[in-house]
Length: 496
Image (tube, rainbow, N blue to C red):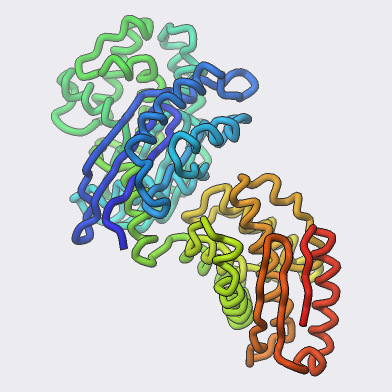
């Protein structure tokens, strides 16, 4: 059990780092760092991060890295959001960034971002009147969530934020009524497919999170447009003042920090559209958001309350996975893993790797809900494209590859889309999963005797009880076929 945790949010507008201590169910913030990088403004026309912006971002992370370099991997989580999801060369940035930080970076989906935002908000608000609507306008995306207490119920992530909206509609720097109307129309178009579902569910309180909402609240209060929070009237008043200014350079609003002035118009437009779409009259502001949500998620993992495991179990139940068979395969895979973990995974977080193997075992037959023919392919597609709570994109790719390759031919090039560390791990985990599934092919209630397994780089040796294979010729035949499959993948399997 740990008590110090660190979270880094590589947002499209700002990079944030917080370090907290978990104590008596609460997180006490020990340190915060924030730099306005505006990564979203550094995408060129081909959606590549420009060299200048990449260097600016890396300079920031070199400072962050100094603060977390001594922390163990399982107490640090670093996530990339909208801009890193979109950037074609994000892998190049991440490779250099991970060297500076000393920890891996996860690119998370918009829905995972929304879940973490809601967690951060729900742990940092006092009001609990029932359902709440949470709005987080970031640099490149806006997350809108309805939840109750600590549980999100309805989540959406829309590709509009303060940076990309300002860049798209006010790139010249001019602010006119016509430009504002066009931006508002675009924002309403993004919101329109979701309005009915959100209004039907309903909520009691509206809460804004992150920098844009805090900046708008500050302006509303300092300009005398609101006594507390953000009102519909104060929001329209701010928009009128921006139009009156006529240009971004000439904006002069009390409460607006200089660093946020270049992107405030895009954020105000988006929030205006949200107020109009959902008939919001008043919004309070939360002190928690994505990074606080990451910390609480890390605490959950540390206390064996891993949201990823809950997500896998829910997915398995939804698609009627044979629970008994997946348990048999999971148990055998775990036992094989524990025999070879020190030889094949000396410098890895073995507990986290074990979890990936167990999740793959739980879902290896999920594709049967579509068809038996090529069910491993169906299952891989389902897992690779689902919104799995707690998982990064890389984690889902690894899980999907393990499921697809757990039987028949081994197309190891599937791991080429995964980062180098996970690629090596994946190739070894898939062999363990294949052997576990093969040994449990009979689906017998009594598990087969566990063979002794030893490994050395690309060689695997299995030793069975005397005469057991002779008494189970089908398993022996399957293992002989497996020798050929592994040989083509560059591994040597021997059986005794």
